[in-house]
Image (cartoon, rainbow, N blue to C red; front, side):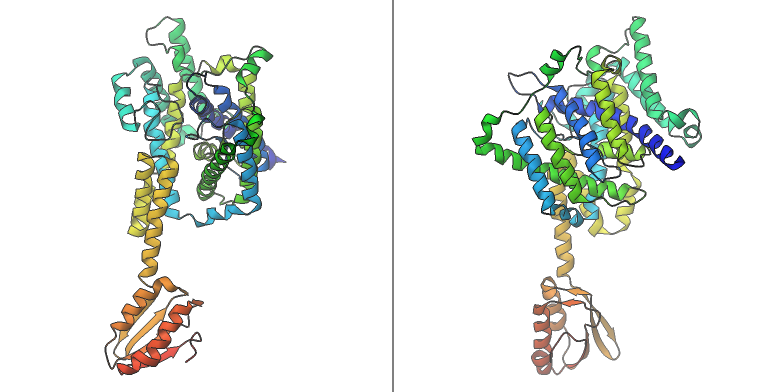
Length: 502
């Protein structure tokens, strides 16, 4: 019982941190994904996606730490297409498509985590100092306003707001202070997360500046802006529903399949990444996760949300917050419901700069600069795909960057296979060619080269005793060498193994 109580306490504490990380992301992505020329944006769409991602997906998923929410960089999706996208994801789960997650190279996954961390830091610096032109949660290098990640920093510095920057930097300083081991152990942080104290202090500072009429107070447009729902009509105005008259349109199903593929890939990437970060090394069933995401997207489509995926930023915040089970994700969804229905006026007092400071701290933990040194020590085959993935994500977006990273990793894998899965040991008695456990047709070029370079009259031992699998093409090559080439070059061959019929 005591263990269950402790688990709930940790999950509640972590859920509050995830809630404050998710809140600006839901609002920002919701606005960006529903902004269509001539129509008003619908910020509630992002919040609904966060609520469904937390409660519905959280309950079905078996991911211990994963948190789902609206996907950045998707598009203004047709809600009907989103319903079918969810259905496609359920089909993917039934077909066991989640197995793809097992084939993602470690260097690419680690590069993705570092890149998301660096991107988060770079993207949130403008919000930290009062430049809120781009929406919070944008992960793409090229922005909707024509700027990019780096030009946005230049514009932000030129437009620096001293009041916002002051509160943002104070918030960031408090986060660093509260992370110090001696401070972290204080009882005041046992039941109330340090991040919540940062938000309270940042908000109180701005309220004080506002009520004293100080010039450094933060204007309303730089605060959280949850839609105010004073009546049922207000809620109805914020909601939109699928138009089933489009059922006969082929384009709906093309869009649905696109959403399903993108959301599924992002989810599998996040699942694999968070499982590797999990200190308990829990293994998430990727097919069950796809099933949960699919059901979540169908629900989101019916209630007016936007595409849902498991999100690395929120999941990392959940991990760092000390979550011990998936209930943290569910609790964060409930906090979003409470925020929308009951405490929007209070939350609308929070400076975006303070939330940006929290996101920057999440980005720093994701980047993990020690990891760069670790990857370098593993050799170029691990380091180059790692660095290329980071750079590709920074200068494009998550999916394009991952695609580039995977291509580079596959090139190294093929190169390694072409270079051979065998070793030549030279001694006074001659040469021994020892083959590895798995030898396939990709190794044939290097094996041919080895056999061709053996000197005439040499003594050679071909050893396949350790080989569990020896490709038929390799068997044929070795048989031809022993029976024909070796005799012509007067090479004395001894064969050890049971793969060849000589």
